Image 1 (cartoon, rainbow, N blue to C red):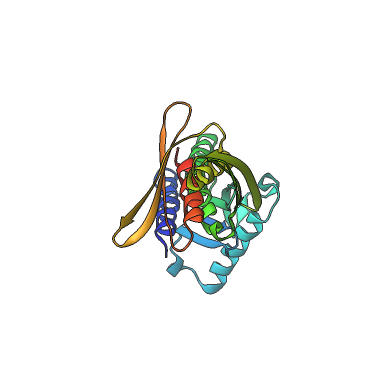
Image 2 (image 1 turned 120 degrees about the horizontal axis):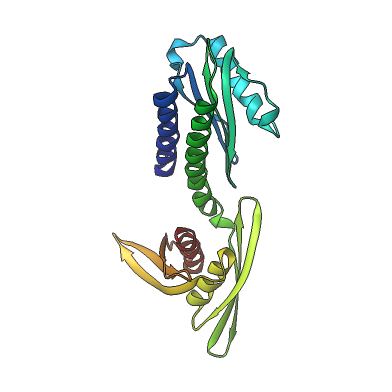
Amino acid sequence: MTERALIQQRVVYAGLDALRLVLAPDLCACLYEGRGQSPQLYLRAPELGALSATEAFTLFGGLRDLLDLPDISQAGTSVAGYTTIARATSGEASRAVWAVGRWDGSFDAYEEEVADGVITATGAVAHAIDEAAAPDDATGAVRISLDSQGDRVHAQVWVPVAGAVHSASGDGPSPTVAVANATLATVNPALKLGSVAEDVIDGERAVLVLVRDAAGQAGLGSALCGDDLLRAVATASYRAARAV
């Protein structure tokens, strides 16, 4: 499991733990699906080992049905026999359905409000982790075009993100600066490039890119160069832009 996946798992379980602590439900679960991946079940209550194969299948199937609904408000209030509060969350690169339920009883308006708040906050963080990683998943498909004009270089960059291609152009005194400026413009044209630097870290050649937004807030991105310096510059610039 990657470090990103481990962090995301901790976030999801932290949200479920908060729901379990405050609401004491008999069911506390999340079915999470990243783009291009199979749905993953996170379960805090009941314990998976306490469920029979049939019960586990029924629970997974009920949550999967909710995940596939275009509007979860159309769903009923029962999942696998539990009276349930179910909410959907989503981002550019992932989606999820969260459910807390009671086997014998229901939730009052305050408990429903608490569940809404915890689920919304936890989902936002979990999906943001996926969104931050989405450009990295597609860095192999980044396209770069350069055109030298005297002592200036013009770059056009195409970056695929979450199924769409973002394109922008930029100029600079060198190919690396031009590519960095063009890549930043695919995220936010108002971002300003601070510096592009190459370094060797533990024997690996890397690129570091520093950017600032209009308020002066800084963002830093890095990427290993491999055999393509300009692609590494584009990747590091995208990461820096998303970090601001």
